[in-house]
Image (tube, rainbow, N blue to C red):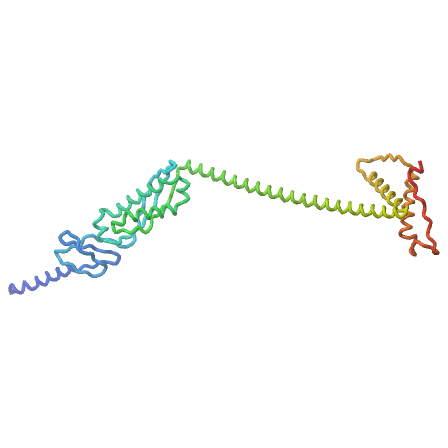
Length: 318
């Protein structure tokens, strides 16, 4: 039969075990637990094995210290130029101070969500639609700065705030597509005009170069003609009559060649006798023989010079 002492011993052992289990708390990695004594915050339990005073201290809030993601639902935003767009996003935050996150705000995630949505409307509502669509990085940076500053008293660090989709109305999208096509057509026309301008400039430069070369060729021909005329004049001044006969005959023959080569001339009326032309050609042949010689041995035969036939002018045969 058990005595009272035998019963008390097991009961005390059981009570001690219960007290030990009640005072030993294990905190998983990535979490912090707050400890409240009679409803007042006293300290924070970090990951690992922790001991509290049973029946006096109790666990308060169990705060997740890892980075968390929060979906921002779609909402309509009116831009500065009165365009209505649908916007959604995502935000990332991390609890840095468990007591502040637990006791400074009620409903932490709901508070962060409403704070983010309100600032999205404020930031994007102050921008034009074109600026809104082209400056998404600037919008994200501005939102992150504003929301992080507002959530700092809660012991929260906003790591990122990202805008996912910006959806203008369908009629506005169609207008933007037409505007983009018109802008591209304008650029294409500008490029075509610039190409045509460059081609015309090159063509004008080519014509200028050709005209310059033609003028240079005419100048050289005129210089050659002037030198020939000067040589003939010098020969005449020295008493050489055959030089002027050769010069006149050459011009005469060139004039006949130009008359015969005209494309609109079918019948040529020549106010001169054939004997005049034959006589002129004979004079030219005689001059050529005198200059170049009558044979392989030169212009002298037996030490004598060949006689010079007189130049027959067209007026003498009329």
